[in-house]
Amino acid sequence: MSAAISTKLDQLSRHYCIVGDRPAGERFYDAFLRYLKANRESLFDLTLTAASAEIVIGHDIADLDPHIVEAIRITNPSLSDARLFGLSPEELQGAVNTAKGKYFEYLVADRLNAGEQVGPVLLPDGYHAVLADSLTQPGWDMQIVGPDGATADYLQLKATASVGYINEALRRYPDIEILGTHEVARSGLVLDSGITESDLHDQVSSAIDVMDDSVVERFLDYFSPLFPLVAIASWEGYKVSVGQQSLDKFKLAIARRGQRVVAAKLAGAAVYAVGGGLLALPAAIAGGLLFDRYWNQAAIITSYRADTNRLLSMRLAQQNRLLSGEAQ
Figure 1 (spheres, rainbow, N blue to C red):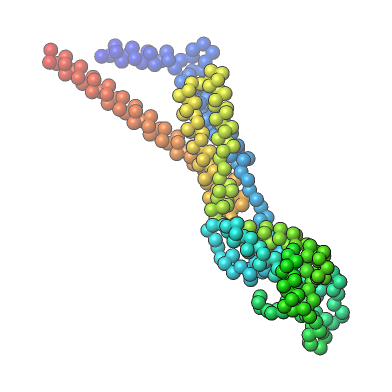
Figure 2: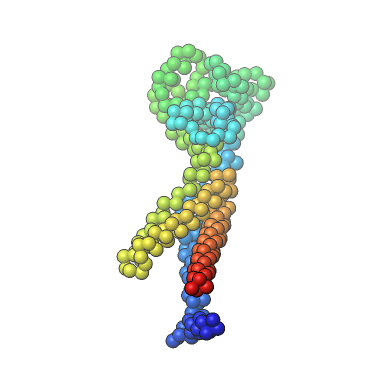
């Protein structure tokens, strides 16, 4: 028995001694090299994941023109509340059409009250413009009030490109002049404000997109792992093609690195979805590192169980041999 133990120790000694130019404990050295390679691989994957993230900053309600926000909220009250899903194309178009008219009214009133000229309209000293309180005010949208508080004139304000809509307004209220957007003023039926309907449409549409931006949409905007997954698959496939690794190792590498990327993207997307902004980048890196920790612990547990089962099998085999010898 003593001779057998001595022989085993001798084999282990030869295995971990200096072999050629390799340092002592070559298996530990190989394990260290694998550890360095895994760290470099993890760092590369997380850097690639962070670099592929699309983060929009300065894209919040606080960055919008207050008049646009007010116009949208007055004409589309439902957008004042948090929404879980975005508007449908039809709902979006309706919201834009109703809000741009009110925004146009705000712009005209502000410019006139600031002493600016809007098209041919310029207020005398002491006069100011007052918008109708009701969205359904019949006949007029703005009144010009004099220094004595009396109404000096009325105006209709129309942000539209539809000549038919203008004709209908003139038919119903022929005595009230219309100040309209640049496009419809080409018809000669209204005063030209110099403000284009297309600019109003674009500004209001962009604002509605911000106000109606949902958690789900922000999550999906960030969570796009396709580019890093393709890059990783291409690199691992190249190593197979040049004989650096087998197909089985390729599959394992894709599974490990792919799960790391997805974990990092999920962590970053979760933070970005709730308004974390640039904090999504460190969150993504932290998510990838936590995945590595989980993966390593799972690998250690798996290896421990496998070695334990192997030792139990060897012990059972040894006992069977002992029992067989005693039986003889």
